[in-house]
Structure formats: C-alpha cells, structure tokens
Length: 104
Image 1 (cartoon, helix red, strand yellow):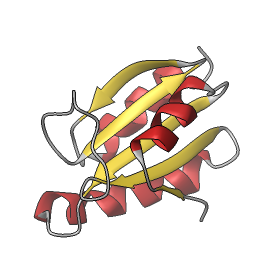
Image 2 (image 1 turned 180 degrees about the horizontal axis):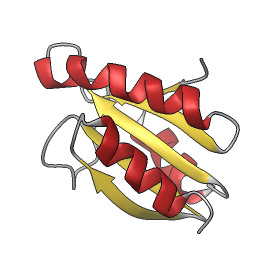
Image 3 (image 1 turned 30 degrees about the horizontal axis):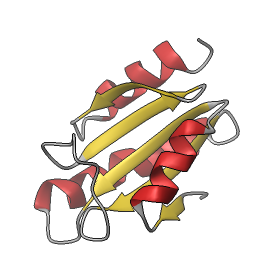
C-alpha cells in the first residue's frame, strides 16, 4: 500500500499546490475513535485507486490546516486547488467523490 505521511503544514500546502493528478490527504489523530474507524475505508480506497490517485495522510497532532473544523477529514485536491473535503469514514462517500474528481 502506498500512503505517504506528511509531517508539516508547509509540506501539506506544497503537495496541494503542486498536485497534477487527484490527491487525497487523510487528516487524522491516533486518539480519535472515528479516525481509527476511517482508516479501513481509506485503505480500501488506496487499494482500488493506486496509480490514478496520490494518497497522503497528516496527523492532526503534528499539523492541522486552520480551516479544518473536524477530523477525520479527507481533503481532495487537483491541479493545485482543493476541490473538496469529505468528513466521512463511509467508503461509499469517499468512492463517489473519487469517481467524480479522478478524471476531471
């Protein structure tokens, strides 16, 4: 499985700004129960879309975007811009957002 860990807000912003393909950044915390539950859905998404989507994760205890109100959150970016945020651990919600944005 190929998920790259992000360690800082600067790195997070660089990844978003330089994205050419669809990028998904999972923002989580180890102490967050909903975040632990969402990791299974994220891993399923990675298995299905590896090669077409770039996957990252950012521990909210290391750094957290100031405009993010809740975790877990999945930030979607493409061509240097955020295209959406999904605050759900439901694989169907995440899959729908990927399908809508992967080739757009």
